[in-house]
Amino acid sequence: MDVDLIFRIAAIGIIVAVLNQLLVRSGREEQALMTTLAGLIVVLMMIISQISTLFNTIKAVFGL
Amino acid sequence: MTQILAAGAVAVLAAVCGALIRRGSGETALLFTLAAAVGVFLFVLSDVSSIVETAVGFAEEAHIVGSLSAMMKALGIVLAGQIALGVCKDAGETALASGMEFAVKTGVLLVSLPLLEELLSIVREVLAL
View 1 (tube, rainbow over the protein chains, first blue to last red):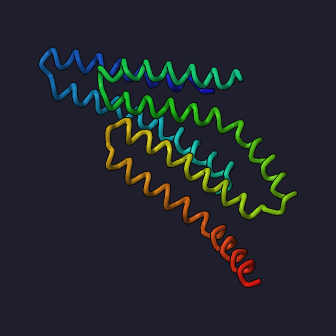
View 2 (cartoon, each protein chain N blue to C red):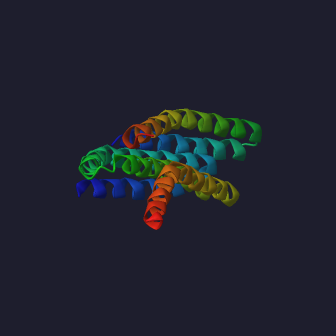
């Protein structure tokens, strides 16, 4: 049960949220958007490998 | 039993963390809950293979291996589709969710077509007598 991946994504999410608020409050909306976008892409890359593992396992177990 | 508790604990924890992250950025929260769901699925799937092996053993005894493999394929399709359906509903995209639901139903129907033909042939034989 690789729970550390889930907590790593939670940490990234919270940091991105805080940075976003920080940048928005200091008047830099564009950088805030860029930061959120970067955080999103990092999380997406981490999840894609998990999803491919899951779908391969389903294919193997159920003989699809 | 402990696995169910572990999976439940992770799911509840992920839901709470997801709600926290959603305040910051909704997209990351969506990805976070998706990662948690994939984690729980992987965790439970490791036990399913033993269930499938025993089912195949019974099927060989009862000489219904063909229909069992169709059932297993249908189960796999439903499982895979369920994750996508859940994510679409979490994101609030009901149109996408209904499209995904339609895809899962067609997939299952396609897999079970040979079973239907087998059933029809048996019925024809019985009626022909």
